[in-house]
Image (tube, rainbow, N blue to C red; front, side, top):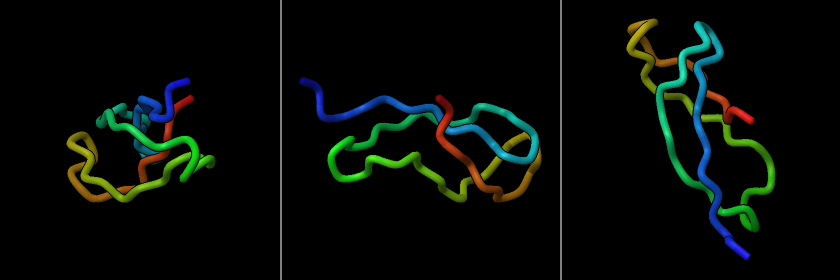
Length: 51
């Protein structure tokens, strides 16, 4: 069983899919929410894990 999961982070303001990352399913069972820079919005916005 694979412990790490590939995820795509999506901007909550414009909906642009900007980042790809990994997360550990055992340590972080919930969806990831990070503040990252969005190229389309040209500012730091909240990015949530896309399912």
